[in-house]
Length: 91
Image (cartoon, rainbow, N blue to C red):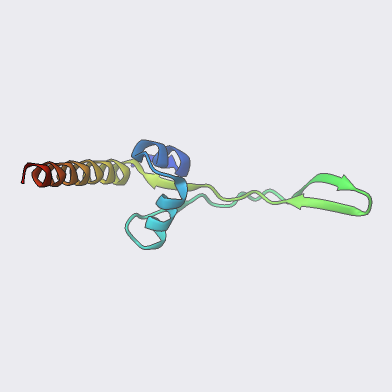
């Protein structure tokens, strides 16, 4: 199975990343998280007595098949809405 990142999935669907995250939180789409690496936090910035450490953040992934199915569902939904609006104008 192939996977794509959150930003790639949002771009394919033509929606904002936040919307896609909400769908995942609501259980509409499964989301996969990369395993955190075994890297230790690294020092990135020092200013006076403060040292900022960053830890690698996990990357979110979606299965390509799930995103393609969702894109198809969105396309049918948009087509249906357009058809309903066209009927309302004819009436």
